[in-house]
Image 1 (cartoon, rainbow, N blue to C red):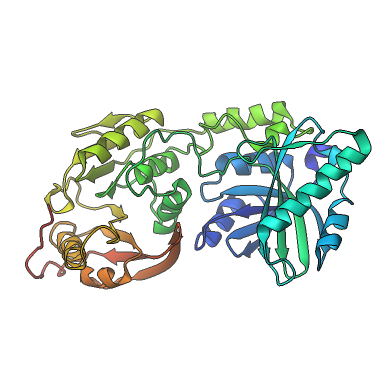
Image 2: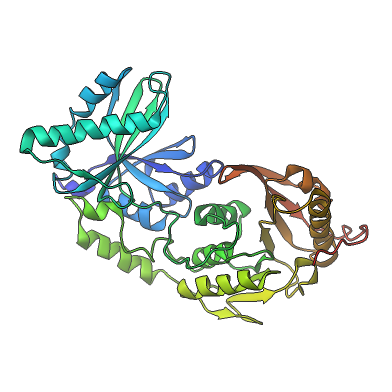
Amino acid sequence: MNQQNLSSQFVAKTLFGLEGILAEELKNLRATKIVVLHRAVGFSGDKKLMYEANLKLRTALRILKRVFSFSATNSQELYTKVQEVYWDRFFSAEDTIAVDSSVSSEHFPHSQFVSQRVKDAIVDQFREKTGKRPSVDLENPKFRINIYINKDSCTLSLDSSGASLHKRGYRLQMSEAPLSEVLAAGLILLSGWDGKSTLIDPMCGSGTILIEAALFASKIPPGIFRENFGFMNWKDFDPLVWEEILKTSRESISLFPGKIIGSDISANAIEAAKKNIINAEFDVNLKDGNYITLMKSAFDLLEKTEDAGLIIMNPPYGERIKQDDIISFYKMIGNTLKQKYEGYDAWVLSANLEALKFVGLHPSKKISLMNGQLECKFQKYGIYPGTKKTSTVSLIE
């Protein structure tokens, strides 16, 4: 039987609110037995699919390959069950390892203790067999092992991704509150953008939404810039299959016909965005262009260049702005949309639910998301004829 075609069980981890989008991405990759979980999606596939998932999924953080499932209610049971796995099938005593744990169980109140106990079981097995043991490297291990415990149900997995998949490899500089690449890609997919019409991010920061939009529109896999994935260290890594996936992925890349426009009031943010965009190998035009256009401008002073399109923005939430000013700022957002962007759809991500009320437009969609530790709403506003009647615009310089 061809080992390449053997089906395995996997879990793709993601951010809260992106599970449905990730499931759709996996469906497009021809994954089977797709099950939506909490901040994750389970699926089945072969080795090639695992490679493709790491390279191509825009909303996944990690791809875990399930190794062993069991029940345990105490430390000793956990230790004994972990030792039932023949770990030398996967790595040797000369390799470095790290154990990540996710625990929701009254039997195991501390995830750090679980990680330590799993690590002990693995290294003790090697020591008993060979007299040597793998070393622990929490920063850059060759192998990551994941243990998930829900009540008394335990699942051991190998992390095929290595570093988190949000680390695309193109970002050189960050703005004050950078948006995760995975969340930025999720916003684009949730918005339903077709990759052809004009997309504007008027508060672009270091350009993450702009770059993720360009990657999507050009059919460029988000992992194309990365040099290393965890599965490359596995004993069964097949470089020929991997090279074929890279080859066909590069052949599918295409120029996209629309415009992506970013602006920000901060000159430092625009400079950071420019460097990141260039590092992602996209053309940048600081005045007017057909690919990614950058402009230093406040949103209310930004000149509209197209009759219709899509706006996605991640405005300040108010952590460093006074309450009165943040309300005026969100009023400005609504008034600018109404006055300048008839025919557009606008999506706004914010953790400041009170300030969102002052946009002054009725959202046609509300999606709950997490930006780091902050609970957010991603809200859609359709700017239709007749919405221009508004109060005086509040300008924030």
